Image (cartoon, rainbow, N blue to C red; front, side, top):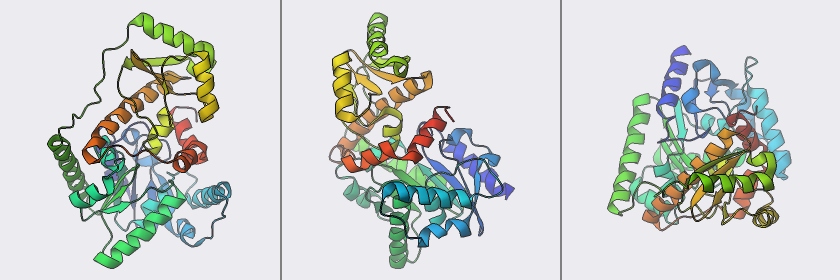
Length: 359
């Protein structure tokens, strides 16, 4: 048990860098016949310790595969949360990743799920599915599904069909507008697969002549930053207590992935953040913006310094994804049903609270 947990901890640190995940994104797990140890929701991969992994009974977790979920999404998620909580062993205080069920569906010992920007450029592209099948024919592509129970069940079914056709489960699963799961019984197999994916995508972007940076302009002058910050504080109060600024860049025009929604919101405000503009934004989107893009620069907003910094970081990442997706037909944003589910999902709200230090 200790060997398994030490190995998955090392893998978590290795793939917990900005090349693979940002914020509390991604998750990892290790298992034996009886127990799954999975990363807690909201924790960072880079900060994981062996004792942090949440132990879960695989027998109890398997109840999710045979239960009949309520049609109402809120009732369904409550049922899933109850079963997941009941599967946690030994009084561990952590809340397991919402994707623990998906981790359990893999037969492999080690699972590393990440959201690399290079990969998201493929996953959030209009022609991403066809390009993925051409570049990685041995992998499984899954069209977008709401994270948590819905995704886990859809992926489990797709993996069963893959195994029927190929005689074994896939070791690579690409999730549209989400991320990639890599499975292996040997840590070196996971490293090898990730390296192949990252090298292949780097080559595809180079061949397409796509720069692999978000093209950020010079930072706005200090006086301009203070002017915008004051406008935001006056209109938003404590929610805009902290503002981070960067030079101008082409922000995403919609939600790219669940992570981007959690940390920088589904949509940004373009133009001057006047009281009228912010009010109109709230009226249209039901919430205040976390990112404002003006002619001089882009601003991340938050009640804490970390929230503001993460909002800006994910806005920059979204801009890079938007650019990379041009190699595969241009960006494909999440549809309204998908982003509204993320905005209202208690599981993602919990993850955000942990990531921002509110839990």
